Length: 509
Figure 1 (cartoon, rainbow, N blue to C red):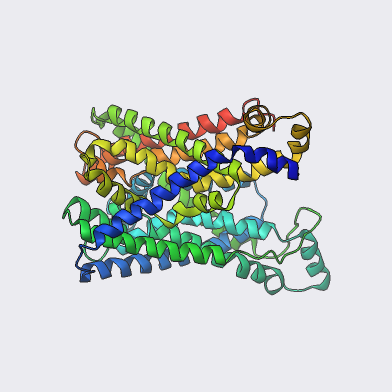
Figure 2 (cartoon, helix red, strand yellow):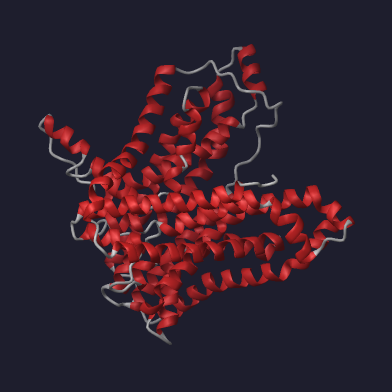
């Protein structure tokens, strides 16, 4: 094993370059922001209100997501039924779903003209209004409930079947004996991950928030830069955003779930506890909450496709181009970092989690502005920032697979004299096709649906598909926006499928 590490370490320099690029992007743009913030006059009342709103909505969104995920995950862990595997798979869909498309689906269900408002009108109650604090929280729960369910479900599945059998033999209660210790170990980390995601969620606040009482820090940065052109205030808010994300990321890293559940013999858990009716209620409610908005996106999109503007096709081409460039860069950076496997590379791989697209975008805007018109580089900057934000997810897919390949084939490769690029070409890459395809699909889907930094840089006629859809929604052309949303959804899922499927065709492992 030691000889394998030495051999693969001959390819360290690409990882060092990749790590330097990521550190420069995150810390360099942060330095540019900090230098500009010196000209600011401090935080005003509206800025403090944005900070309070950001923290409060993130706390409530994370608490609701984790609190609702616990009974749903417990029901899925206890019950076996037809379609359970498909439902668990669909729980991963919101993660790659374009945010702006999902918001359109939520409006179709919970908006003033949505299904729920019509149902309330039948019994004489006023319609719902999804905009503002409760709309932001509702959207965050929609996006993060599936993630929390998947993470907590893994905790439940990790409890060995032997412990359930021992509890049954002793007639001991399952909750205090097995479930509560697992939740104490898993739930705090899940809460912090969801809290971190809600802190840096820009598109949700842009579409459903706004106004003095529903503005997040990221939305305030965008408004300061685009509408007020107050660079000092935007820079100061960007520093606040980075501080909040960094503190949360450090807490999430420190509160790692301890493995105190021991191991078992991998037997299938046969549960006898719990109410079938109550478990059925939670599973049905979660499925309706997640799948009904997606169904409305498809239904409304089919009728709205004929009303799409002609600019939709150039916007689609721009989005595909940005997604392909971002995906290629993500794979190159992640593969180089995984090959390096050093502490500096590991630090650079997680560093983007402490930043956000708006903060990096603000820094790049300030840097480019010294030499050229930033609006001319919107697509390039978008692809670069999207790749940076996808690296933490891609490297978590590639690094474990890389270690498995070295553990299995390292000695054989050393005995054959395969080192450096030859080892990468003939041993590693053929066995990384599956994780490479999945990571590429993930990066492509995330980039296709991104509505972040492009809002800072895009001028008239240079919008991507998510930005065009948002502008149609802002102009109250909801039918055309629904058609664009369906096109964006189809493009995102197709990009993910092509890369993921491409990685699995004729793969050796």
